[in-house]
Figure 1 (cartoon, rainbow, N blue to C red):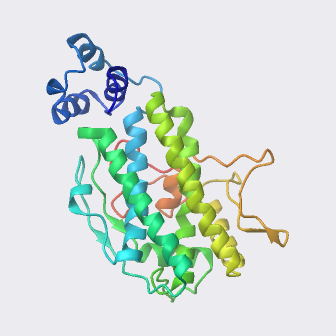
Figure 2: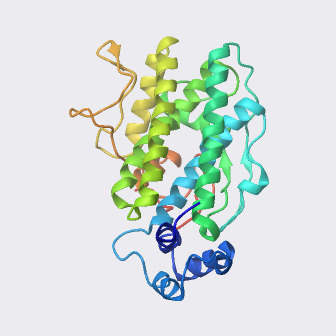
Length: 304
């Protein structure tokens, strides 16, 4: 499937450290592939990242986010999440708290959910395959209490109320909006840090898909006149990721704002730390909370 140079490049950037790199080589069974010579293996065993995180660390960070998205959508469509075979790896594997099938009333919304669920499952499978033995396992994910906390912080509900994103279509769309835009800004923010061109192209492809997903969710919310609630979520996200304005709701000055961009028409970027501020539902520098009660797996695990 891949040429010799591509395989060498992918393995060179496949691990977070030397032990991970050796584990990848062993798990991939490269001795039987006949595509990597002794000199290449020697080169692959050297340090690969001296300035910033390795490509594998970045992709593993992305994998944590894909686990969350896949579980959210798969539960909504099928009432069940990822199979066990797509949740193992390095680090503690955690359970998923919450989630159930949504009783969709609108055929189009259900079809959107089905397609997005499959895309997110495919993203998990792809990143796991690319990372090989260096892939992290699915961390503990909370898609129950976290949504209530996020909805309270955004002012969607009162302090004694709960928010169930699976209760109806509107709640499902609002729940998806909480993290869909975040995925787009996460991949864009990571792009300059990825060295391997094969990985960069793949990440760009996933970014494009996540942007399509975000566009579907934003458009659906606008069509249902849920702009004011979506804007509250946007403001809450912005309050978590620092003083810089990196978020936009779907209404601006009374007009539609379905594509959030800066003054140059370019999508926003977030650092991994800023993404985790939102995922952990905490503006401080922490290593756990919110959607990931025990934190994410991998070396990139601390919010900004």
